[in-house]
Amino acid sequence: MRSLRYDEFQAMRRFPALDGLRAVAAVIVIAFHYGGPSWKWLSGWSGVHLFFVLSGFLITTLLLREEHRYGKVSLRAFYLRRFFRIMPVYLLVLFLYWGLARINGNPEPVEQRMKYYLLFLNENLTGNAPFLHSWTIGIEQKFYLFWPAIAFVAVAAVFRRRLMVTLCLLVLFIAMIPPDIAWLSWPIHYVAILLGCLTAIVMHHPRGFALVRPLTHPVTATVVILGFGVVQACAQFWPTRFGQESLIGCYALAATVLLPALLSRSVLARGLGLRPLVFVGERSYSLYLIQSIASRVAGGLVPALGHRSTGFFVATTVVALLAADLMYRWVELPMIEVGRRLAARVSRPAPRDGDGTTPTPPAPVAEDVQIPRPREVLEDVAPAARG
Image (cartoon, rainbow, N blue to C red; front, side, top):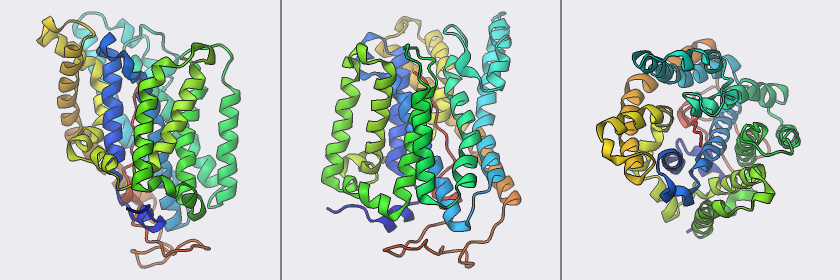
């Protein structure tokens, strides 16, 4: 019963509880889309912003560890890994949408919007567009086009400057939120991602980690996780006069507090790291993208389920998970490996310590820190969802 140490955090190769959280986020989004009134209390739309926070934290942590080991981040390698992580499944599902539309004799709605899908301007689509939930991919793709250059080239290896730049970007995007309320108010989505990035930056630094370390104590972590569950259940009661953007911002902030707690040894954190949840979490990207097609298949197989009901939500989830598993095994994993191999070819820097095993810790450091190779620490994953 103790808090996580900094060296233990840096030595973690995977964060199983975060995979479990991705699984929960993906399923509650599907519940929001297809579960009907019975699941309104869950506020499943929030799974989108939970994904955004997780994405910012995971990818920034990967980049920070790469920078620490090699002294710099290779943008070419990052973009290659990113391309082969996101694009193959995305294009496959987009092709399926177009192919099904052609079979049904109505391809125009997809073809007319193809430029938005291919240029990742999906958030500009209207409410009746096919493949509408892909707007989150557009948000993240644009963010990660510029974030590594800003945070790891312009302010490379300078903690305080990087922290200030991240805070300034947060303030900038908050200031860009329009006074009127609309789901197309895109700056708030970047705020959620940046909060995850900020958490990663703080936790990567020894002094920053010391600030959040109490949250990793099993007792404190249990309280935080349960508290987040209360936030999730009470989101439906948010006063409308405060606006949707403020709700999303507060929810994303709560998610950032949750992240350190999920790295603890608490029973609840270990529960999220159970293999069934990790299994779903690893497939959450494909699961999210394929959900609309899966709903049509589920409706065709069992017409009696009706539309937007608990049975329809469960059937859609099962069909989507089966399809996601196939895409994960036959598309995602092979393409991720291709991206990693190509990234290794364009960037083969020697580790700072020169022995290929243990990096030289940044000074000053209170404890000896051993960080594994960055490409073994975390998958370059950008989970995406849309409520």
